[in-house]
Length: 312
Length: 185
Image (cartoon, rainbow over the protein chains, first blue to last red):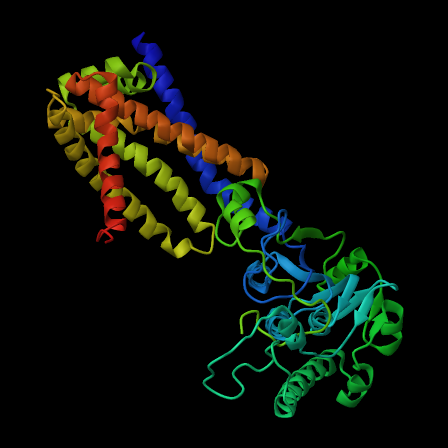
């Protein structure tokens, strides 16, 4: 029995010792093998829906739609040495100008690291969606994609008559004459209209500059195209607003070629949510509390980049 | 060497008898060797992993810190458990419990074969296997600690579990109390 016990213990000792020696030799090999295997990754980052700043709404099967999550994904792609190129899959009618601008700036930073960023337009990549595409290295669109809508508006509705009819009388104590500018309970004054127009012109100028720089066009030419209209993908291609007509997989192949990846690239999709993170909520991932109990954000108008914060 | 190997066998395969034997003999030197093996071997494996990564320059510091901290935790943890066991009516000696807890950490040596097996699997499966394996090892060590408390102090299994859980419960009470302090109103 004693011999048996000693033999078992010695056998365990041998197994552990061999494992330790194996660890010393296997670990570097495995690391390099795994790193080598990941060398040809192309990251896919989805821009779905209205582009709004902050954390946005929680989606059931995706990360929150706000640009904070999008920017986080861009940073992850930048920091992951295995990611050699990024495809930005855009399916967005636009959103707020600051949010589009912030994401656009982060895309430029990602490109500055030497990783090509390619835009692939889905159903629609208009306005703020086009803003993001314009800062990428190459734009792919389907012939029937709706794009363009380069321009800015700030919406305003005057509900004073309706308020009068239903007996609502709103009063404000203001710190300054323009503190309630764009307030829906009174008409806009000529002075206020001029103030807003200057803001719109400024934002429009910024948008035009982004497109001119990204598409390597003269600003005057961009202004000719940027009267707010939408274009089909094939029209945009003819006008130089899009580089190639093709699907998302054409864009992936294009991104891989730009990054010098040979063969079929490994795809890494960002923004997936695990059932675990849905249940327990980890960091920026979706949680039940955010899914079910958070106040639903008011609808954001779907057309052009806006300049109005949700809370005035 | 002979009795030591047999004691190691008994700790793994018949822990109750082994812990009673350790309580009676109080082999602190052998317990020190067993404990050192149980921390040096896994820490060594982690050292190799760290060396293969960008954090390689910290590998040595990690190894030294891991060994020192675990030795300190063994000493302090045994003292705390001894106090609580005596409060629960335990009759064993502090040296006996110190030695028994030293042996109770032995299953951690299996972390290395586990990690090597994980390295040979695809990344996703490796993470799952390693997490499950570590969980099993932790519960194994906790079970051996309970058996050690039982063997040394002659307590019932329920009381031995309470001895082990009391520091944890005390920590929870302290943290919850700190979170709600000062009281509202």
